[in-house]
Amino acid sequence: MAGTNAEDYTSPMKTLREIVRYGYAPFMMFGLTGAAYWVVSDLVVARGHTWAYLLIAPLLGIAYLTAFAAERIAPFFDEWNDHAAHGDTQTNILHIIAYETSTINGVLLIPVICWLFPFQGLWPTQWPMWGQVLMAFLIADFAFMTMHYLSHRYPMLWRLHSVHHGVGRLYGLNGVIRHPLHQVIDMVVGNMPLVIIGMPAPVAVVLGFLISVTLIVQHSNVDARLGPLAPHLSIGRIHHLHHVNWGTEGDCNFGLLLTIWDKMLGTFHETPPRPITAVDMGVDELPHFPKGFIDQMVLPFVYEPGKGEPERYKPKTETPAQEARRMLNAAE
Image (tube, rainbow, N blue to C red):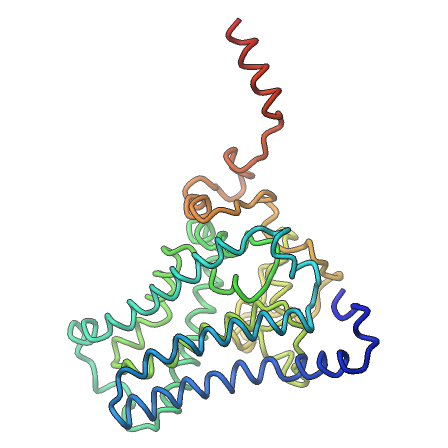
């Protein structure tokens, strides 16, 4: 259980743990996003230093390092910090590279999209940049929630989305686990409408950074304390319930950050029907969810929802010696 470490009983560690619990989410969502906003609005937009876009990368690196540190200090489950036992770190790093590369490519395509859809007059460019970012995030939050909801309702989309849900734990790295095809659909539904009506590239960069940080916080193994905001943000226990492997009980809490859309849709559940444990994450039909990146890319093409686990992912019942003996007997 969260916070049951013996170090809780030492005053310095207990104080540090409380600082992390209450300070982690604000630092990530406001501190780092604020820094990214300053880089883009002041250095790029106001001063014309386009090279400053490169500073977004180290800020994202700080976000991941902060998540790792916070997970060690104030985890929900100590078991989720055992990277060797889960054996998924290398694959998740590949997912991060694929996700962020796709995001960068999306930003680079903005001028082309604007040329194809010249509806620039619809975007409120006269607003202050922070207002444009806020509007873009609210629209994207609703669009991603809608796409997320549909991904749990339609088998073809669920095949792709199951790559995200198959993980056996939640921690900072796996927030951006996506099948590339599903990410393309997400970007088309969530970001394309904004770009078509003229969202400027600087706003898109801040929006992309904010979404990445939101995904990190949402999936972090950090016992974050959100106070009165807890029922309104899809973070921590609320998102854990979405990831449980209890059949269809996880078909709730689809919001990227805000829970208001789920409340309107009737899919919001604040309290799980029973305690969530460290082994309750995943997809019930995929108890042997593949650890390798290639196998995860193949998964949507061999997994048929409702028909159980694909044969290629089931563990062999024979030891190598037994398999060799069977083949020898068959040859005789």
